[in-house]
Picture (cartoon, rainbow, N blue to C red):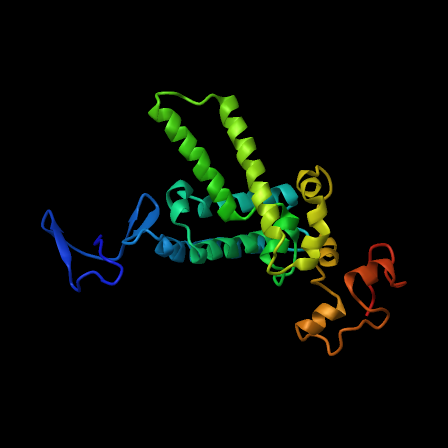
Length: 267
């Protein structure tokens, strides 16, 4: 790997010889699963990682349909697998994590969050992640990096952290993560209706030990579903109104006389 200034590129045709083997000089190299670039931005790492996460998400999409399929714990397990792939080596790349790599990371998280809540693919990342109870992966990467730094610091002093110390660190850092997540939700870029509804009960929502989201419940919470206003927005209906009511989720559930026993308003 050739290290160079910000305005220079590796000399064309450069190579080194090791044991009689010629090795070309490039702008990036893979080492222990991480792609290192000459400027330590890790943009190349995430550029190569994103398609892998997308393929994993696409494969799991076939296993996690909106109707039927595995239950909520199984869906969370699958999401955890992709999360582990995404956050591999986090203590190394977190200090250099820029906006573009973070955006790629969170875009992949959106796919898994939508699979968890059985939602339409048009749901925003902020809304889907909140409903699924999945903190943004860039914030989780920061927690992993802080845990790693504390372990390294104790090892330098010749100490070994006790299990209760590790548990206390994890609890403290998870608390800080939720504070940062809630602060971020105060200025969402999308999914305003869902966030406005859930944010006042943020802790209760994340800590609840009962209830799961069904395909139809997610439609009601997000407004992305068999509602004419939404279908009109994606050009599937000519007009935004229902035959029977205004056809916003709240109108369908609270007002529409055709909403009976949990069945959505008939068209």
